[in-house]
Image (cartoon, rainbow, N blue to C red):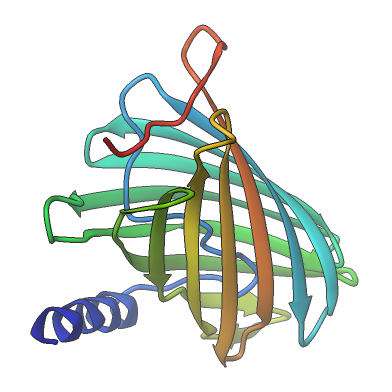
Length: 212
């Protein structure tokens, strides 16, 4: 119980000191990619509130070192266009009973009905890997917060994102993600799914790493 309180306090403390964009799902754990391993992901997303409808996003993740990485996001759909670039810092790894903890921050742009929205986004994330009978599961909780500007107005959207990465024993070449976003303030609720594949520097697709 004490550990759970500590992780919730971590999310709140780091989240309230940083900023994020309401148009973007987290769809990521607190882990970083190993060296020479890159990830591409397709994400169908259904949102409600504001521009209700569906989006399709593409994500690209690359490592910088064992504690950090970068991510690019591009999407179209009910939001005419959304794009973002993020830096991820993960100083606390998933070891023994300790969950992984990270903070991701970056710049985002979205256009809806001819209106531009620019924002600075950040979200602390906590995740923990487990084995289960169908494969590996890595549930996570994230707190996206943003400082955004639209039509000369300042917005401070806040969301709560809860999801998991899943690796099935019978599907060894792909990872799957599922996430629910809950509106907290000036944001959107959504449901996102993700299908991810990995490749190395030569462009050869490789299998995702799994728990022993």
